[in-house]
Length: 306
Picture 1 (cartoon, rainbow, N blue to C red):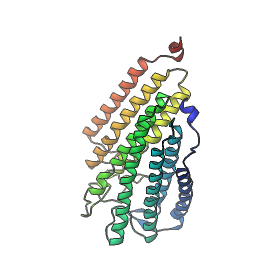
Picture 2: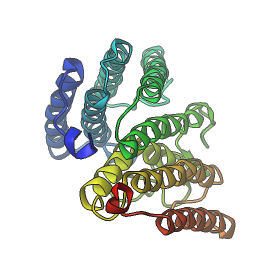
Picture 3: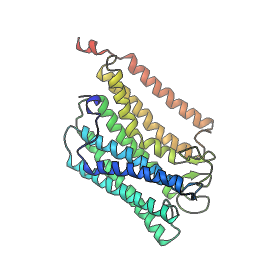
Picture 4: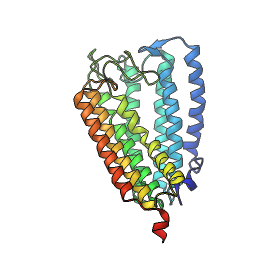
């Protein structure tokens, strides 16, 4: 079985499927809010945050449902953990939307007892979600997935996305320039000039970058495995394809803390200093070298079966 065979619409986990479609509906609702509500919060349209979170929930819940369908053996532990994740995502989104309706921020907001309580609920839900995905990651690590490229993609994707979640933890504990606890920008105030769509700071460090990149390893690596199996299956044997995914995954895993390190040094993504550039270059050279070594040892499928 290859990833071509298993890349199908998610099924078998109703809570994740319901959440996927509910998030699609929320994307549409918040998109209307972007145009119908002229309020601005932290320098951006007030409905932009729930819109981005809704899009993220669509991608994440669909991917997780697909992943559970790929596991060779049904795991009730993994399925219960996924249900817990659904509950935590619903709680998080409920707080975000509630605060938008109230006209205030959801993250790091402790200006009143109610705001502090809602932020505490979000913080607790994120921690529970992290632990629940860790359980699913362990299940995926234990189970034997027949296609090695798919196996590497799923396992590395899960664990790197956990690394991406961990990259968000410094946001909750660091002190902002205004003296409050909790901020995603480093060296500047939250809500300043940012890149289009993402809003990542263009004048200081932004911890959301490593968080975002890490989370989406859960999609990037399985897509890489799919591409290799779909379009390179005639050129490379299964072992070579698996090694390519492994090398790419290890490089990806290093990229997440590297981006977080850059942000913690108050550097905008597109304005790295010489030290940061050297670190990125070293990672690129190491990854490309690894890919080159794998391709140098590559064997065609007919050579394996001969």
